[in-house]
Amino acid sequence: MDRQAWIAISLCVLGLIGWYAYTATHLPPPAPVRPQPTPGLTTEATPAASAGPSTSASPATASISPSPAPAESVAPFVEKTETLANGDVELHLTNRGGAIAEAVLLNHTVENKRRVVLNASDRLPIGAILEQPDAALTEFTATRESDTAVQFERKTPDNVTVRKRFFFPPATEKKDNYVAELDVDFRNDGAQPYNNAGYFVSLGSSIPFHHNEVPLYPRFVSYVEGKRKEKNASSFSAQNYPLIGVERQAASSKFQETVNGAEWAAVTNQFFATILTPLDGKGTGIWGRPVDLQPNDQTMRGLEAALAMPAFQLQPGQSATHRFQIYLGPKLYDRLKKLPHHEEEIMDFGWFKLVSQFLLNFMNLIHSWVKNYGWSIIILTACVKGVLWPLQNKANRSMRRMSALAPKMQELKEKYKDDPTRMNQEVMKLYKDHKVNPVGGCLPMMIQIPIFFGLFGMLREAAELRGATFGWVRDLSQADTLFTIPGMSWVPFIGSPAGLPINILPILMGATNIWLMRMTPKTGDATQRRVMMFMPLIFLFFCYNFAAALALYYTTQNLFTILQLYQNQKQPAPVLEKVAPPGKRDRKARR
Image (cartoon, rainbow, N blue to C red; front, side, top):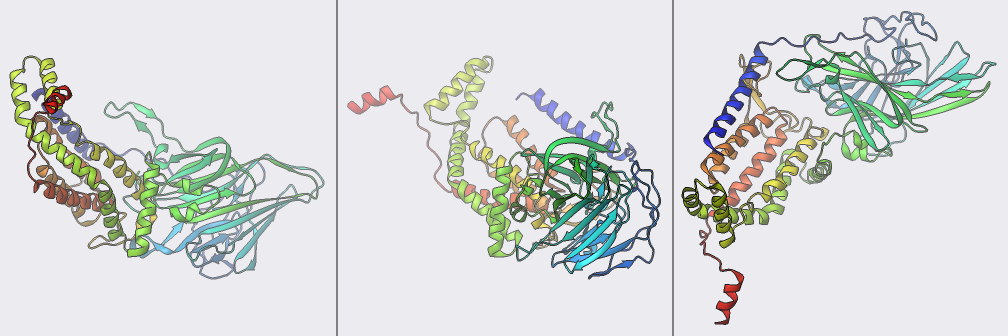
């Protein structure tokens, strides 16, 4: 690489940093899409139900007002709630649509030690049956069958009785029992055939739980014909082509798609999901819309969705029962893997899916022994490094031989500087004569690429790391911020709205990267080495605000590599001797 190319790369990097700083401090935020209220519900909120079985009218009730609907209008009614609970999840069920208003996870907390709550009481409840996703929610009559089952019932203007039963199936695990079931019974009590053109089952809503959770994480996902399909919350916003500002996509307020046989559909954020699985059929479509939590903050955006079910017909006196499984909990791969309809595919591991799955399973296995995820990551790193140790030794020897050849290569470049073709021929001949492989040091690096990105994909989905502590790190799934310097939000790539966070592990990672580069044998020309000096800076920006677990892995790996290089450098320096061609070696041996 010549001097002009080096200058061009430097100017491009500086230009990118300058453009990022300008857009972060001068350009206004995009106009948000206004949130749409749930049909039939006023802005008055209903207080959460108290724990334990109960049937009560809320003190400050939500008034249900009539909404335009093709089938029927809805008269105002008082919202009442029932509660179902096991040791892991507490369901707050409402007569508004006869469904789950909220699901409280009893063993998971968010910031300020509040329990994780899936869905919101003022959004579409989970399991609501609707002719159209934006139709009004009707009143159901609730009946408690037992401590583990609640039934809702209503009669439509077509004399069809709709009966819904929510219950917990018998527990199959000692912990992490987040599965509930819903049986929906349609009975035609009229004198005419009843033709249902298809209906929607609400999935509820998904919102971010942490200020670092970008709009890419809240999404709705479906599993259709063995393939995962998704749409995230940010895709509803207007999007422009970078730099030129031309609009690529207008803002949208809803999404609806017909699919051919959805095995399940879900709404999810980074670590939690609500998954609805039809047990005796398959879905025919997906509907969704964005939910803006704070009008001036596009990063705090969620969405709500519904799964379309196929049409059916009932003769007078005939009944039909449709069964659904509902998973309401963290995205634990081991737990989801045990469900029968490929629910584990909700995990978005990216291109290196197999690597991510292996690393996650191996990390959980180690954790079952050491009971600490920080040490589990360190031991995982040591195991990976141990497998690659012989290969890295061979690469280090190759780099040392390349370094020993550097003076001779420089002589050839000076001698044939006006004839690049001849120079390349002589350099390749030099490699061949001394049996040096110029790419021998690259193989360990190439193997590390799928491991790094597999780990990156695994850590952004692994709910196991939420709240896991290690040393000063309070949560391995988030950046290990010790404090924030206010007024420095303009810092490119790593600044936040609150200022410049000081994250220790990424800084240690960058420092060990520089230490490692200084120990690595010098190969190639000086310009290439200067370009490679940017790598620690790139990795620092890449990992700075990501999960501390990734920086912990990479820092530990650097320390093991430094130890290996130190051991290799204590060995005698390689002696380069010109290797005779095979024919000459044979004649010499015969003499």
